Amino acid sequence: MAGNDGGRPSVYPTLLYADARAAVRQLTQAFGFTELAVYEGEDGSVAHAELAQGNGAIMLGSKGTGSRFDEAMKNAGTTGVYVVVADVDAHHRRAVEHGAEILMPPTDQDYGSRDYMARDLEGNIWSFGTYAPEIRG
Image (cartoon, rainbow, N blue to C red; front, side):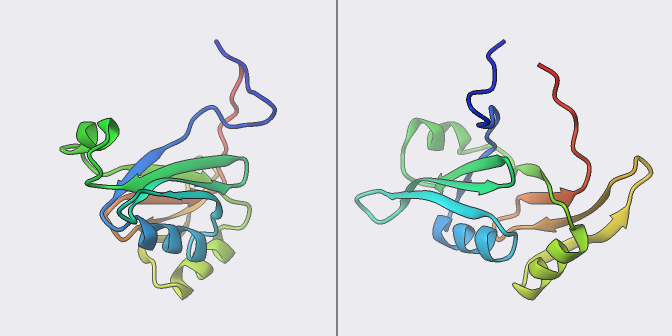
């Protein structure tokens, strides 16, 4: 099994959006991600973007580019992503202030986590909570 390289995550959820620019805006403004990189295609689409949250990151791009990944994802369903945050209530307030669709308000779970759930502009489900599974490698 490969080790972790200098604190870099080894798993990156990857999403495609019809309007990737709007997705980057919502994910940074409402959900607190930090934009690491956005690369444009010749047609102005988002060929590839990287956004970070804590010690994790996601990659995303525009649908309809014709790339191999775009073709493979053509008939795929939506994606669900879980992100660990320190203060669920403050994170939730920020998301609400930026108009995010909240599916479940901050809720204490039986397993000790406090989390909430939201839907992004294209139907992907985002859960933000305090549960952080320990990864042993």
